[in-house]
Length: 308
Image (cartoon, rainbow, N blue to C red; front, top):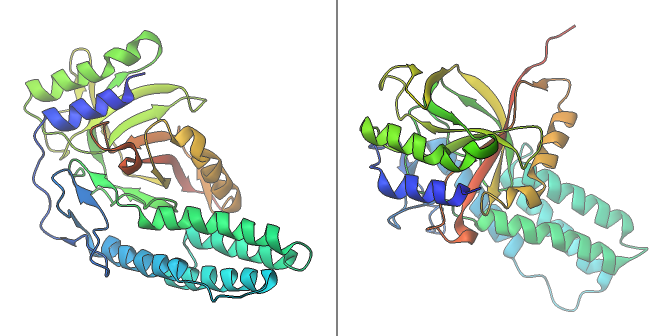
């Protein structure tokens, strides 16, 4: 499947619509951008996302703080746990990164007396992954469609609310997958429609199966819905999804455990939320962005579970 080629061509060959002015620069307290744009400049993002970027910067500094020298194995585990807990305070109780750090700290402390080296390794592994997620700066190659929420940061899971939007969609099943991009690309270029990010791909029953691909219109008022030859322009109703942000390429999500993490979230929140549709992959980058800077989200549509 040519997913990376799809996104590269889409983002590089089509003009981008203007971004909304009602946002703040995406810069963390350390001065590092919370995200970078295709031209290398810091993009803009909503105030809520900017505040989260600041919290993540504080948490990263906590995890990077040096440990005292000369600690015993047991005391090193305790120091690692204290450092992890300091990061969770910055991130807040609703953070998935906080949940993982707290779980690792709890498990390490329970085994510290029996096997302190294994306990230290356990918390180190989780802390290192958290540091990579917290330091990650996604590259935003095109603006989001009107009203879309800012992407979920790497390593986090949350419910996102999407407004109604318009998209042009085509089949990706069987032999259709390699021609999907070109059908969509011809549609937006022939109709002078600017590219946005993300590109949306609906998953089938497995992570390897993509049912369809869609380019999202920047505004639902552009054009009109209906049959458009080899593609279909369709309007999507407002929806909620549970989403996880993922560092790496479109392929890397299959090895990241992201789908397993979303399913585990649904199990933990089964009393409140239920699945409401097929999972989808939201891709933000093509191969012109270095692999270690690429970003995507996996999302599962959800709805509030009816009360008995």
